[in-house]
Amino acid sequence: GAIGVAATTDSGARASFANAGWGSNYGAWVDISAPGVEVLSTTIHDECSLAMDDEDMTECGYDWYGGTSMATPHVAGAIALGLSVNPGMDRQELLECLYNTAKDISDVNTVEMGRGLLDAKAFVECCANDAPSAQPTLTQRPTASPTEEPTE
Image (cartoon, rainbow, N blue to C red):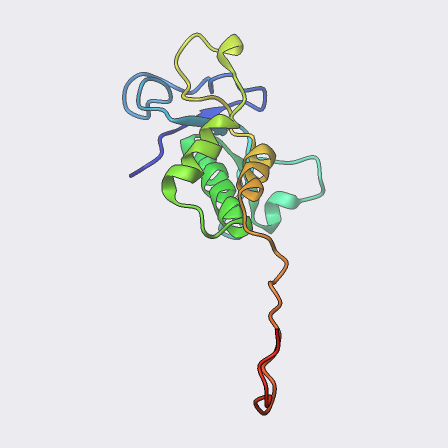
């Protein structure tokens, strides 16, 4: 199944471009929220519309964008990081870590924004807590030839 992602400002407030119709950015369908306002993204070379303070960065194929299309990759990337530290996690375990580590943003929003704001660091730490040990289990190598008598 899909994960419904809403776009927020860096502080967790619902993005101002949000509406209740097409492009909806809040409500019961939202599972989690993530930053989606003024996100630096790559572009096709020379397709830049905004000037930046850093010297000519936009001429190099970068620009600022906003929307759920900018918020959703934050969640997908966090999930990929979680799986990288614990590849054995199933979907339910991932979702539990994702939702249980989200920051409460109800104080800056008057509408439902899912379980809260993605906290990627806390999410990856949650995934790592249940990960199997990175230390390999060493076993004794068999001898080249059998022993004459069994040992105790």
